Image 1 (cartoon, rainbow, N blue to C red):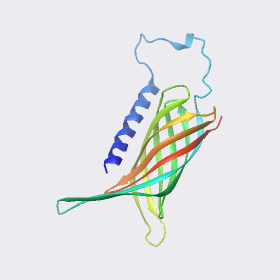
Image 2 (cartoon, rainbow, N blue to C red):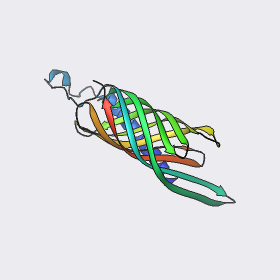
Image 3 (cartoon, rainbow, N blue to C red):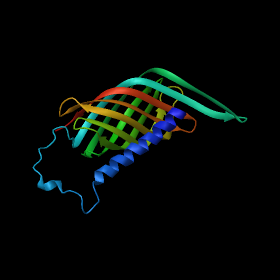
Image 4 (cartoon, helix red, strand yellow):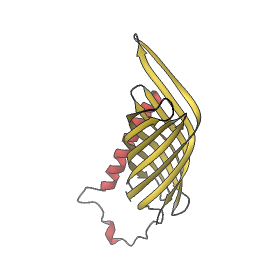
Length: 188
């Protein structure tokens, strides 16, 4: 559960930092950039995007039995994730996604995404929101879960980013995660 606790804390931290940056400077003495002739950054994304990721699945179960902590982390096979979203400015986006964790375990989520630009082409991000875990097949079931993720993205072109991220959900004593590599296409 330690990995997922760190993931949740980092998600909230990056999300809050992205929101704070989106609000901009609050000082009355801050420099007004409107008077400076600046060229637009072609990598400054706004609008709709789609994203696809593929990577390693992690599953963890942890609970107490008679005062003893019992748990196990399993590195599973291949998992995949697709997201669609809308980036309102360079610091904030909303997205919805679907993740396949393998072995009939799936999740849909809605997340708020805080983005911290490091350079014109590179950013780090955190996302958090509600998720809905469900299984299919003979042992089908479903439950609500907390979703979170952290990652980094690099703009290859003005419309295409490559990203690496860790994202997952936790509910009760079960957690699922996906460490992945993917591509994001921004509609212009």
